[in-house]
Image (cartoon, rainbow, N blue to C red):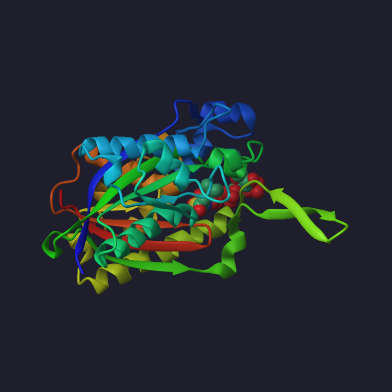
Length: 329
Ligand code: ACO
């Protein structure tokens, strides 16, 4: 067994910025309602008929590689956490080709807003068992493509973006991915989904075919789920590592709602000065939200060597989980 640590990060967002005032021209809402209920002021939206999640994922990945002057050919594995691929068979292979990581194995991982946490944990397993040395983990989503822009209960929440991290094998002493705790409750999968609906029937062989709907969400239930389950996951994870909440340097939660972030921190007695958040600028970018915020926090020199970062994702599935990281760069 060897250690694994995050070596570099990168992120990318589309140019078009849509603020709450613009949204209130499309649906009956207001900047005040959105800011008070969610903390979101604006979000980025991908435009361009030929643009997809792959473009954002590639840009974020190249930025991460450039930071440590690493050749894409040194990447052994690419895990693309996304729920909005531009090919249902997967988009990771397109990222592999476009960034020129020709020696890397590449696959998609779908777990909505928990996708990045699950991808980091998956990458760490491949590294710790000695299979791979350099893994590129990307969280990227363009949920604007699956949002009903006439539904005010969901269209105010989501934005597009991508974040990438390079995770590298290291000695056990330098290990930076200390532990994790993961959960799924499939009984509640209907609380937040992009359901596939059968529409037509092929008469000759009785096959039903259809298409995906827009995002469907029971906001109140998802809110209650997040504020009750996420603190428990964090407690369990910290307890398994014998780390007290007082020793936590930074709490980085999936950027879904400012009220959820503060409620979770309060339940853990973690002071709000330890929160990493950029939700007001980007909204909920699903699998991208955590690596996007991590990259920004590192760029502004918030995070120092040996800092303990508690990262938690939660969302559709329902899925939720925690990974505890010690910054080792
Ligand atoms: N503007 C104005 N009024 C609105 C809007 C809006 N955009 N949206 C809803 N309302 C109205 C409703 O119609 C309702 O009116 P009524 O009382 O007359 O029926 C009222 O506001 C209250 O609606 P609620 O849905 O109860 O509002 P709530 O306070 O719960 O806030 C919100 C809604 C922000 C969606 C909240 O429930 C939330 O954040 N939930 C969690 C969402 C989340 O975290 N999702 C994670 C997704 S992660 C993933 O996996 C993709």
